[in-house]
Image 1 (cartoon, chains in turn brown, green):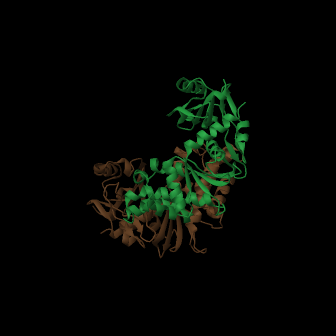
Image 2 (cartoon, chains in turn yellow, orange):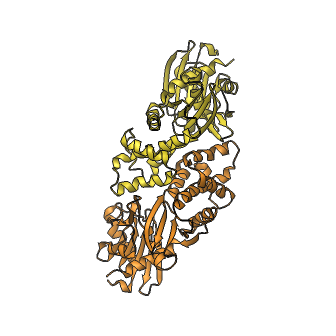
Length: 293
Length: 293
């Protein structure tokens, strides 16, 4: 098959996958999303899960990124060491079959940290000029990443488990009832952010969310937004950590999350540009495909 | 019924209850534990759940503490404001029926914090001379409490959600596999404690537990003890917070938890006495019963 005549790009995450048909001229054609994330596919069922995508989008070469390349995916694509750019990623592709390549993740040896999937968005946005070639990118999700970009390459990064912690608390904790309502930016969220920015006692502040409601000192309907702000405020405190004040900050990912992080960053005087992660993914996966052959 | 001829004491928690027959001379007789915690009993089924205890231990007056007095229990026994001692607690008993009293919890208005159940152990231990009348008590459990005792009364306290966070991570998070082994004091636990004592970035350090194992920088079999140490180290940092260095520290509760907190406290040069919470409960509930009538 010939990559120059177009290909299928797949963002294959833990719980979902999204596949795009990319034309030979770089145009974005048909696409779909389903819940066949890497964890729901048995190890020996990846060839058929891949064939199913070709049945829907056409018999094209395929480039897949994300958890499909993890030790719980199809074939492990070992992490590339940061600093890493598109050339490093393209050189380390792993082939599931002769027409299907898997993108490796990136690791930061100094900080002992890893990413898998975000690198396509980050490097794609840098190559396409959607972000400055030197900046700090905040990439919220289940595991938020703070990524320093220099010269268009990923230099160092740190992961904060904010999304997963919020979901655990919402689904299984003593705060579950209080955290059921949707999180909205606003006064309660901002109050949580302020507390999170200065607190070094998250595990105590979480309990006080409930105690304040029990004692009539806070409204139950504010608890979800406040708690999200508390976690995101602490996340921003960690992420801005040692970064120079003049560094430009970009927030990249799903719009419902980037707006919350942008609001928290605004609270510390950082005007952050928001970017839709899906656009960045398509830009990045094309950059990698162009480097094949 | 006459309290002076003995009574039944019940430590009625969220998921379990433990009932003790206490003789008129203060002796501890038959007792049992089962899984009929307050959350598993429908609101209108408490009279029969109480009758069932009398069927087993005898037709005696009953004094119950813990979540049975919460808004998810039988009858809500409103929190007594700290500073609070045994007399305050005894005056605020709420009666489920004419022979069954429920112990109220305690709230700290300044810190917006609440406890329900621990107050019996704390005040019982103080009255029985098991702890100094002025000290700091660490009471680990699902929600660890750091409680300042002055003149034998509860003056102020703060709750840290350590136990619940560890359980959420162990049962439902991306760290679940790593956290399955038993937690043991030792080198990995101590390393976690040291990190937790100085860290103000728990939500990032939790992710790095996994990343370090993926990168071969830490052994997977150490992750459970390290993570427990990380959480408990942060907990100790919060708990010792503003307390004077000369304050005596006592750790009270279930022995498998008190030994971990005692080990963490030893790491910062605090020799903490460990006390079995059950003995303290029996001492406290007798003190309250003596104040009835």
